[in-house]
Image (cartoon, rainbow, N blue to C red; front, side, top):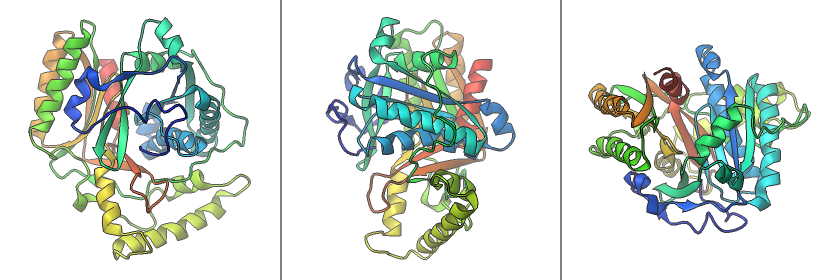
Length: 384
């Protein structure tokens, strides 16, 4: 998401590409400076939470990491990736302490307000390189309004795996701590598939993969998807629905709650705020500089439904035939040891939103499958 430049200017100076197939072009990536820091987070027991129909809360927790760090850095731009049941990010040395505090506060909030346990960690890029991995980053622009970070080099995957082993752990903040989650919401209903199925997909390097063979496999998958432009985008305008009260009102109230404020009091305020929003969007009422049709167009363009963070992740609205073609290709590549992959098919997608300002075009919308999504796909990959 484009915002104020990062404190050392590195990320803001990166070239931007808008064709997602270029994610396999290493010339688009630049090595992160040694003194930058990688942060990672994931929900412990997300599979159990999903089985209890709590995936909206799991997604909210993952998005909260990105929102909390963004707000702690006063809107300064930094690379991040949303993973469904977690998130990863990179910040400059000057921003590391603020990001660490925001991460620790988010873990406490997730535990106390969402009744989930978040595992968190941070490690320097120099420390990752000492372990034989690299961290390279690129900026992909799905629209003229935002850019989304892509990572290569294996370092992000290493940091995530090490965090899950208990390495580089960051302790949660003291009880009662609450990050600044301004702009975090989930007001839209589930988004039914328009083409038959919503496919969540995770593709990682296999045991026999070389950097070149894995990139070729990722290129092949993206080309299969891109053969029908926009056919895979899970956010068609006609599929977006807002009801009142929204399904996510309790989660938004917990995110917006101020220290010492009761959930009930904040929920009443959120109900009033979301009713006003519902009326504006339903009747397409222009309020000041806010134009509902413009916001909806930006929302669709700014949706984060495909990414690369040492693994390819996609949420696609596709026909069963297209889903089968993707899976058949990946089965062959997995048999050759080039990839490990997991998929999960469901009937709808879901969206968690970060809107720092409703009148600015740089809001970003995190997309996942509505019935397990990335987490279930990743679980299928581990089981394969």
